[in-house]
Length: 243
Image 1 (cartoon, rainbow, N blue to C red):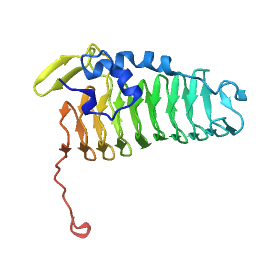
Image 2 (image 1 turned 180 degrees about the vertical axis):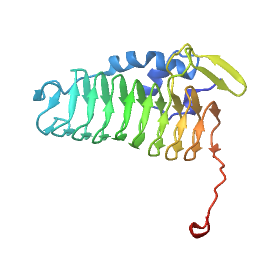
Image 3 (image 1 turned 90 degrees about the horizontal axis):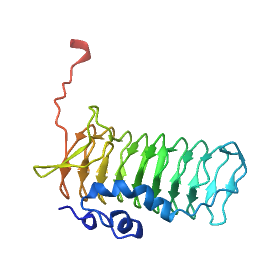
């Protein structure tokens, strides 16, 4: 019903991730295997104290891991030209694509793939997710059990992935309900989407290409390509001297 090629530009990881799937969210079920099949660890020889890189290190491919960054596990790949800043924490398995920034205070919790030119910013947490390339989450974001194309997440964006009641996530698409079989499923967000500051998405949200989610909106369900999702609120302005 929803074709992944209508959401994301062509790439090897895109095609592998969605190979054989019936529905978009089925890709999340094979994400860990896709990462394992492509992982080429290249940080196992770094000087460490426990899981901490104790000095700034430049890899053979030009990637830079700064002093004070944390790397936990031998199953981590850092792409050419990427930068891991001090106090960032990467827990494997993880593939960090080329020319990607993992900024100060970022937390990568494992089973994470990023393509090229991504940003995982300050106080941003990512787990069990694929950022397929050109994906930016610069400030205070949460990305869990999600697949993102070339998108930009405004500061404080939270992609909810876990229902507060004890049941699997249901995807709602154009009046139809689909049992995903997933207890955790965040968002699938196509190329060109943008979210405003402090916006949130409910578990199982699906956004096609070029959706604009305005600040402070709580989104859920399915949004077709080019949608604008706004929150209307009444603002009252008072005179401080006459209150």
